[in-house]
Image (cartoon, rainbow, N blue to C red; front, side, top):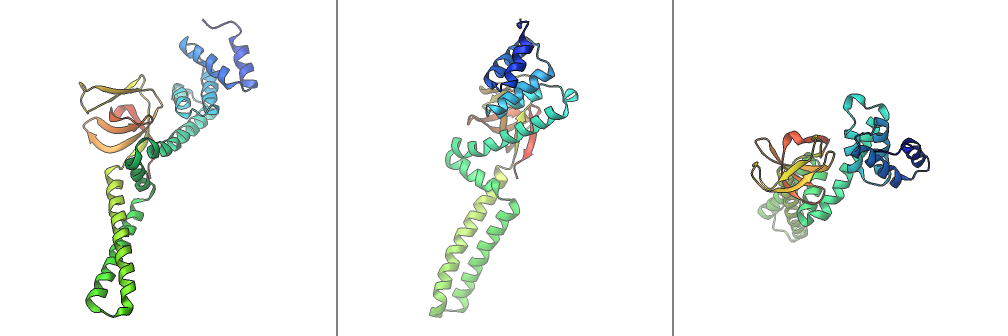
Length: 237
């Protein structure tokens, strides 16, 4: 049971910007099923101040959509944006070379990657034409440059386009009413890799089997989750 002076202590913690105390008191109210929408808003705000956007998102989403006022909706949007941004760094750190390549490919629009690939083909064609129609010494340096640029650009463009298509997906947020299990394979009887809380940021990969989606989570796990448990919050590109 919450102490009788809970509201006074909670409000004082907000006024003094004691965000750790706000979180402690707010979580107590949630555990007692006695958290009002105002308490949830300030609890989520405290998590944002503590640089924990995924936790903030979870709290803001616990406020029914038809009861969210403008400031709660704005705070939810901000927490989702920050959660999405934090995943950019995650994909580089948690997944090593694969994550770096995927992130680099995802950062470039598909038409940009295609343009790079076409430019590489253009240099290779120029090099081929130079070989066929001119054997003059003065063209030798241009031939070498064309070959190098052609190989580099076409290889990068082709690989980037393949990665872009293979790992095409969207940032998402788990919004299930309870804990959403991340499974090792797309079947109910597979082992549970992790249990994800509502609002937890994930990256939805391109693979899909029936109702299952393949994802990365914010702790570096890769697995399968029911599509109904994922809500897209921002396009990858």
